[in-house]
Image (cartoon, rainbow, N blue to C red; front, side, top):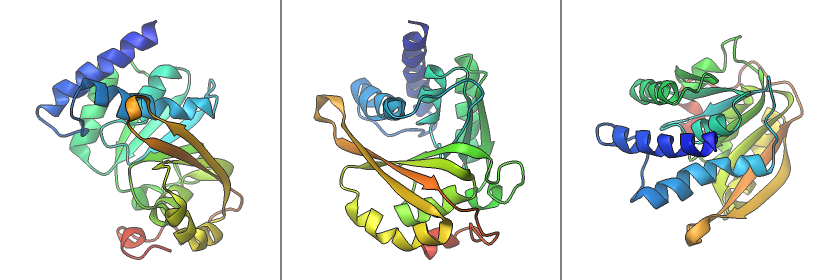
Length: 219
């Protein structure tokens, strides 16, 4: 019950912050709930988040999926990363308002942070939602996922072309595709998939490449 109250409070806070800073795009409260909050929680149908586990949310933007997951898994540590300082300050303030002591935000470029020893290959689970095409996304994630750790990309159900384009990136970065988990949002708001990858090899020090390169020249 407390967690449901927190999810409602999260939506209240997002609506308030959106009046001055465009954190998340939505048309109405129902769309915010289904397309952002409930979509974020789809991960919990696949992974059990336990005490002491550390999860990294890449390109967290307005706090999704990290904040809803942090509400539902209060004993799991979440690090939310985005390059936009204003958004990360707002997300941290929202987390503080909701009493989420398991949330830390970091405002930094992904390519830079991935070469920081405190973060490099240090997470058993990394997630990303609405951030980049899959070849770029895999290079972003590779620097954070530990050996035999998992990366989960939230994508639309029409992911086949992206996955085909990502074949070279998977080979170079040591990722193995474990398969999709398909699901449909309520109110016919879309068919989505969680694309799950396992990191099967340690990462070459040259990855990710310098800032901007993974996006401009995907593997």
